[in-house]
Length: 361
Image (cartoon, rainbow, N blue to C red; front, top):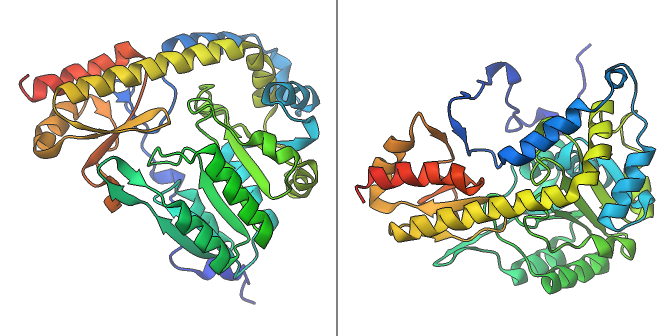
């Protein structure tokens, strides 16, 4: 008898890359390609915290209650408003699993985090994209297009990363409030992805305590510098989190991740100092690029976009074999830009020096 998978899995366009084809990044290169946190000072701290974890942790199953309570205090919500997940990606997937059935409408931006269109295909959603427009000041998302899409499609889920990636754009708090009210009026769940918090400090988590239509996804991968642990969390109204809890696996994440973050949360001041060092490196690098005559598109995350124009070939040749970064984009709103994850000033100076040499200044 033939197997009978979900209808969405018969979609030939739904393809996922195999880990068997992945190639490890060369440790001799500067890794500025995946928006990771490369702050050396934070790495020293996180390694010390990791080394403090008892050896028994690897042999035991996780007990996450104390982490939930400590995290709730840091986030500023009740502990029953939280659900630990494997990165913010895990929170995003749970939102799809909880609310999206085959044929339901989902609205997301374009370009955006790669998993939004992938999850739309996985769960058989009818995805409606709202495209960023190209402007002289960088990508622009029209608030009116979002509100119109809500009224026209009445989607089960509206996905709005804030900041968005790869655009680095943000929506103002008052805009998000208006969108949430519109979502409540049509029965849509608003999923706000705050993966880059607190590089962008503004947040809508407080609204989760009064609205069941809002889910906030966060990760410890960016500002906290532990992308390798695959731990994040969802924030929502306790009733909404209760629905997500019905779908979680036996254990939300690993014992190692739980024990590490329970200790690391005591160092939130050090994390904020790391964010300040990285933001300083970002300002330095962008100023250097402007001095060299290159265009810069402002972002609110730990990355920046640079337009090298007709000197691009020389720059890319100079960086080849030394720096990993995203050289180009397909979407028109970012055409001509290259994306660099940012790091503290000494690391960004290495990159700016190579670029300056390449153009003969």
